[in-house]
Image (cartoon, rainbow, N blue to C red):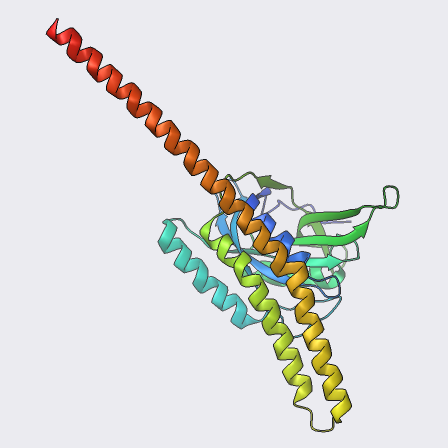
Length: 276
């Protein structure tokens, strides 16, 4: 039974463009978990507003665990300070997210303990989980589930328990510059992860020539897979957004011309009335 405590966070408002970056990252691989950090602000009524995310590079790929290094947290804090200067708003690292490919959306005991550790540094820190590559047994279609949580001390135990935090996706007409940069950075990060893994294996001295050729083929195959599953769809999405923006610019230009014509007509009518 959970302790009766006042929640540090009442709700989380996740902007749509940040949500899409998280979702795209989570869907980039179904073999291992991926992770990132959330940048935003904590208001006076205990609502966390997430405006952007930072995709983190994994030092090791694991199918059931992710780890955020102190160096990554420090770099994210520096980025949050930079955004605070640009926007004039009190930006900071307000949470983390990671994926659960092929498994439940609920946090594991490892996730709950990690979340408790983060809350020791910041009570308003939240955790997001995106469960993907899950098939609905009835419709046989894929589903993506997501949740937000914090950790609380169990009343009769030294362990921690999860507590769900309501999460709301905030619609956004345009994609923010920071989220756009994160989306574009994703293929680069995934590519660098593959290069790091290949170099670690390739540096082993006891490998024979056939094994090295095989590892090189696997490396090439993984890069090609990323091109088809991540880079290609991302490029198509950006091209679609560009086309929509260009169409919107044309509509605004036409509206501007119509307003200018109306203004000219009004000015002409006023001159006529003045002369009369």
